[in-house]
Every structure is written in C-alpha cells, then in structure tokens.
Image 1 (cartoon, rainbow, N blue to C red):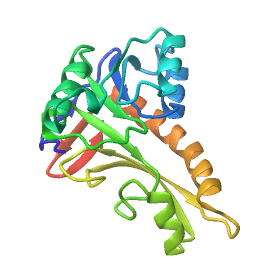
Image 2 (image 1 turned 90 degrees about the vertical axis):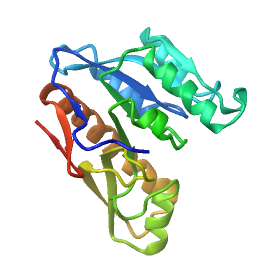
Image 3 (image 1 turned 30 degrees about the horizontal axis):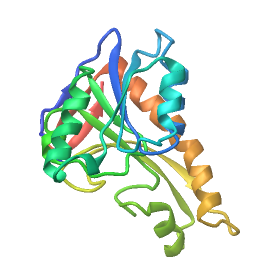
Image 4 (image 1 turned 135 degrees about the vertical axis):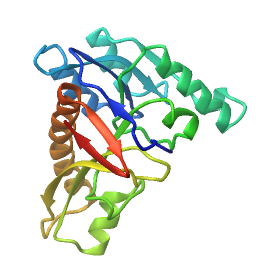
Length: 211
C-alpha cells in the first residue's frame, strides 16, 4: 500500500468519508454518531465491505448510508478484486477513506488513488499486523494502545497521525485488553478524522500532519 509524498486532504465544509469495514462496525457506529453534526466537518457517504454478512451493513442501512459489498471470491484474482474495491470506493467520490476494522491488505491500485487512514490496536511501530493485541500481551508490555495512521506501501507502516495509550492490567487476557483498546480506538479515530476534515491532512517526506 502506498500514499505518495505530498498527498493531501484539503479542509472542506463537509468532508466525504467512505468507510471500509469487515466486521460488526463499532468504529463505523462511532463515526455515524457524529456525522450528522455540521460542526464535526465530515459525513459518511458510503460503506464498503468484503463480507456480505458484516454487521456494519446493518448499521449503514439504519443510518441511510449506501453500501457496496466486494467479495474476493467473486473476482478471478487479487488484482481484479483490488480494482473492484477501487471502483466501489470511487462511486462515492470520497475526500477521505477510513479503514475501520477492514481485514484485507489493499494494493497500490487502491492506495495510490485515494487518501486513506487506518486504525490499529497497538502503539505502532510496535506490534503491526493482524494480532497486535495478542503480540503486545505476549511480549509483556505494561502499556499498549491504538494508532491512527496514513496507509502506505507496508503493513501498518504509514505515517502516524495520532496515538492513545492503554495500560495493560495484570489479569488481562487478549479479549479484555482488546475491549479496552477498542474504547480508546473509537474515540481517537473519531477525533482524528474530524480534525483532518476540519483542518486538512498532508503527508510530506514520510510524515503526516493535520492542519
């Protein structure tokens, strides 16, 4: 995944968000809870998922947000699927794409075309990948957290926009720790996306900044 240097999101009266999600959509729900407020500065205009049974589809329907389902098995190969994802996103003409629990790696066909941010349940660059919570717990860290970052060519390697710390308790297991991280993650994602919408986002020389 690649976000070229100089990629920007200009501040606008209302930033158009497309949210990509694979699961129940708790982060999507948090964004939907704010997007009717004009002062927030951003509105979810489309939801794209790779799973036809994703709970996020029900959330979108209840909010009156149009959706697209792009299942990998419906395409001849991964490049064709990525092209399908890109076209599904483009239908909604987004200013910013938000990966909110989207469990697929996107190719440059998608990433080079749009400004994309992702949320990850660890303090990057530590513990990237699909098992950030499990890996942090296994390592024995005393503090972990969540990160909102710009998507680039690697897996969870893009420029960091914001982070929040979450303490690891002595009796934590993966489930209890992840639930506490999710609470911080929702708040951080909503705050960061709103700031990017109102103030603008830029990536220059490998660093991301808002405003």
